[in-house]
Image 1 (spheres, rainbow, N blue to C red):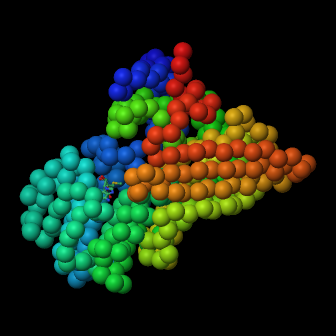
Image 2: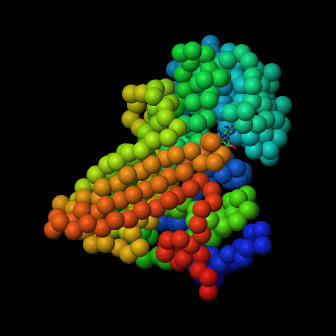
Image 3: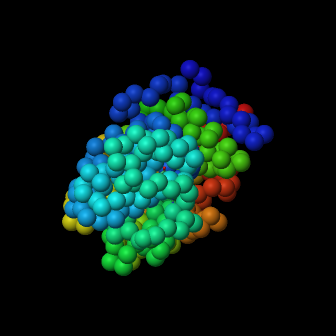
Length: 367
Ligand SMILES: C[S@@+](CC[C@H](N)C(=O)[O-])C[C@H]1O[C@@H](n2cnc3c(N)ncnc32)[C@H](O)[C@@H]1O
């Protein structure tokens, strides 16, 4: 396997640093984030329909909330998963909405093959632009990202609550949060190059093709090394789908360094509650299709020791599509001897600079 491969997108030839080792179970791997782009394929849908940790939580919530109710499944995917599960749980009927053309057409043929296809109404398009009646009693929407809000859940579900749900209607999931901890990227991938997994390249290509040019895409780390966290993990984004749901938010938190090492960024991961009082799904500690996201903050790794604090501010604002958030991270590392070191990163959903941070110069070398 070669260490570098080239992808071509809209007239741009992009060299990509590729891990020469094939992906293996439990081996750390670097991917681009994927869930927030309309590039889902059969493989990605399968990783979700076979995610037991995720599915048992959604199933338990539907078993409680769906019986006798009208259910709206936003982002039903090719398998109509939650529309079908809602009916099995005793829902009166289900309305399923899917925006991706291929997924919608596959869902339509899957629907035709069901025993009672007329109990599900399938619509093609974005829930935010479609009009339908009557309103639903329950809305299920698995549009949750590895970075909780990245797939646009806040904007989509604010709209669903305003236009598609009966007053007092409920949303599944109930709550999602993104947690962050201080890390160094090379500790997450010990003994491995800072390079994309080869199997991620077609997705990188599809995302750049979709946008029209390359950009500094968020970095998804699969199976990060368990000992890499240098601080406690704290929430930096909170989405209360049945409460005060905000499409834009800003959180400042202090990450206490717990052991000596070097920090060059933060690792973030999802906590998800389908019902209010359950133990949340924790994407760092459980095996699930959600992975962790690494954000570079400092150009060089900075030495840290217990007693140091990384003050982190994460801001989510709506991108120009009005749905998907752009994130901005700002950090101040305060060392026990009174020193301070500043770092920041703009992480737009799409667009923005290419090769702005050194990590992206490593991943996309020019020569
Ligand atoms: C993470 S997948 C989940 C698929 C399936 N519901 C499952 O849980 O296995 C999200 C799906 O939602 C679709 N989607 C996202 N936002 C949507 C919206 N506002 N309206 C319709 N479909 C949407 C995406 O195209 C994608 O198929």
